[in-house]
Length: 305
Image (cartoon, rainbow, N blue to C red; front, side):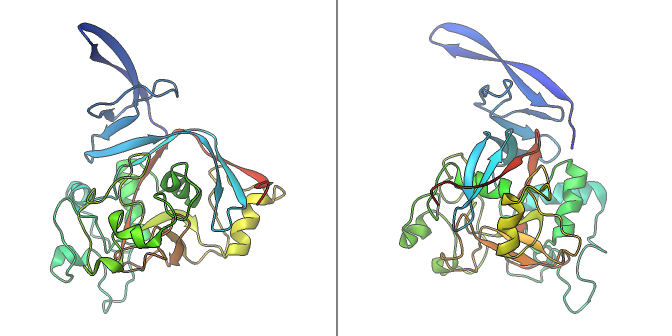
């Protein structure tokens, strides 16, 4: 998705002297409070998406070892913005109110399921309060939001890179599964429902609820682990520039991060699950990105792994 780039000038004070700082922001956004210029073309490190009120964080370029075996080396060639939190009820409600979107055609058509936004219609114990993550949304529902907001779902590689935030341990806070409840919402919290976003500490890059609370849709078609690794290390097929999987016979979409209804074992940085793009549940929401440039996976195994 292409956006016009705009530059704004922010005045900050250093002691008694004032210094003008020029921040680059995409059109339709403004710099968030306390934003500073990043090393990437002076893009603001934090921006506000004016259409939804969503804060987004600039994720730096870099490389990381992806997956549980950490043998798939992926390079993120350019920074991208990602939602500071999962998409909230308030943000999704703006979309529904602006467009009249009712989810028809983008959810399982069987009336016995009646899955779309059940918590908004009094058919779920999940909260419809503004600061809770939206749930009961299918991949197709999430894509409809993205089209309206001019945003994207992250590829699996982008999501895991942002979640890990430079770490290599199973969780971005370390290896101790018993410490999980200090950092995220899983079934061990014994509170079997969604929770307000930002209720637990952020990861090292300032992103909240990357592990637990709700599963998050990724752009990718789901592939089994053999293909998942093959698509990154085999250069003959020319994997997509954004590192995502597009399969001719893809039946399901990737979900990342675990939820309030899964164990802490599942809520790892490398966790992955899959469902059909018309399915929804009380454990599924999503997070969005604003790409600045596509990512480029490296067709090499991670040395030493």
